[in-house]
Image 1 (cartoon, rainbow, N blue to C red):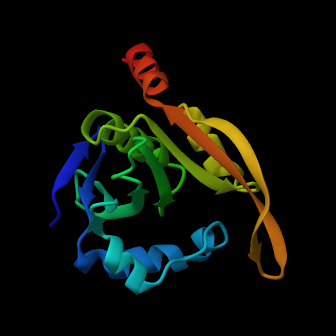
Image 2 (image 1 turned 180 degrees about the horizontal axis):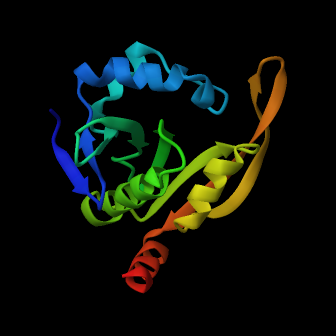
Length: 175
């Protein structure tokens, strides 16, 4: 099992290993996830599981160890201390796991990995994800119009980000 980097109330983040690839690929292929992402190849995931520039995390329940999702953070060697949270997939919805996983990711990014800024992008019509990201403090920074071509049409991506001082202020207010 990979190294655990953060623990929350119900969930923990651990560094993904090659044995997690089937779970990662199956999560991307689930219909409820696939419409909101452009899936990556097994080779991409294998090359970037735990590299100097990025890391995959498995999100798992503390009580059972069952995987409920995964996250990918890149930009770890950026001279600008900016991380791109490239993939956020939680397979079990309506349980608050997305919010808890994002809080764990941000704590790791800002407290352990020295990030100054974290950001992600999200398809404009993914209302559930946009709600989660904004509820944990990410702010909409803009829209990349007609930036990806999917199933014969162009789609917009909303860019959301958070700065370290914003995250710390929010963390201090929430306790």
